[in-house]
Image (cartoon, rainbow, N blue to C red; front, side, top):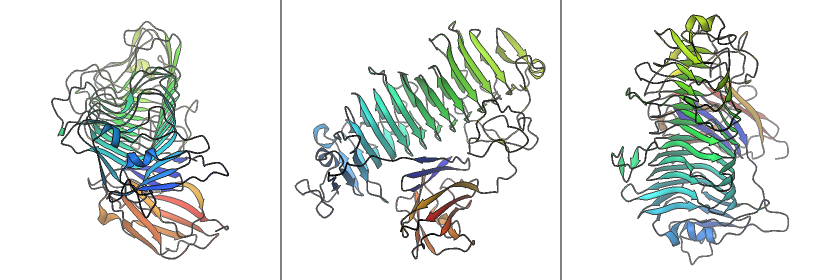
Length: 585
């Protein structure tokens, strides 16, 4: 699974190769107020810290450059490798901006710089006490020979932070480690191979994680690297998560994110008001998604592969709500698909397993299939189940809830609740430890069997619901139109010469970045002359017009299914995005 990201003037579109995700976010960043003069400074590997930091005479080190910034300023880090080894000299410590004058530190557009930590350095970037700071387009890694702890951390409260288009990998501890954070946006970033976990933090003292948005990210392979060794048996950390935070006020929103092959949990949120939607959580060693805080919701998610191919008996499950200590806490699970493998001894889902604290769980239009154990809903849970599929192959008892067991025929008879089914959901290609396809086959009992009550208007891939006579059960709405393009919201741009950058979250086969697979057409379907070429980072494509786009005209950026990752995965559906050149250009 691999994300394809199209960036244009703050508009972000996320799609997935093979399993397609798509979403738009519009992020506007505050500008300096009238009367101020924000400055742009530069850092380059061949610069000098005795220089004035201009484009012509750049500084040499990012940390030095960051220390010179004032509210509203921007530091551009040019392409190259920057070695970080000294706490006082090399750790980037941004000053705070203001609501009307953000501090921006970013890699040069089109060629991401690399910050390489070594000599047991604490972190590349320390945000302790910082506010109104934006970090974007950086790669942070170790030299994979010497210890380097974390990518970004903040042990003192931080606020109003935007982290965008980061690639953080092969670190000994956390990719991003924050204790108290208010108003964080983590966007379009890939964080993987971190020894202690991708994103998270210890127990906070001022509300923990509050007002959080994580969108369009990939949080994977936590625990699979430690001190220069892949799958190091001497890794001292237990259960490194893709995302794991301690009790927090929230809200926390995680969307359009792929979380896979972590040696701990996929997503583990103890925050109140957690909303996880349009995510794929696959092949994690421990729990898939686990929520603890009241007023939390899981929607349009796919969860599968608990155990990551290891069939040993474990207490882990694909979906967990447990150890909730707030009486009357409320949870929802809507249009979510959970698949397990009967070879693995364990529950596919459990809620308040041995707790006497009463909570409420509403579960609609969801599938739990393929597990060896039952779906276990603790006796203290006020459980509403409507229009779900519970399928435990070859077994009579399917669900334990309300203080009793429910066999398949009792579920079908409506004893658990209206519209529930106990039949094979007929996935296209279920898997365990590898990539699966959990779209519905024609004839699936999930098709048109859901309820409109509380149902989202889109599915995991942002297709409209309902597609047929009724809402489907599960994360995917069935469609016989997979060959039809996915249409994104039209946009208006002003730059007649501006190139499009298509950025991928994993290496792309450069031979497929061609004018046949990526085109621009006008309103009459005539192909426009553009230059399509691979980006220098091996993970992007650049689409540049040969001539200016005339003002007032409508065009279409077409991304074809022939684009392939280096691992051989193709785009599942073609994509079309309309754009208009404004008359004011």
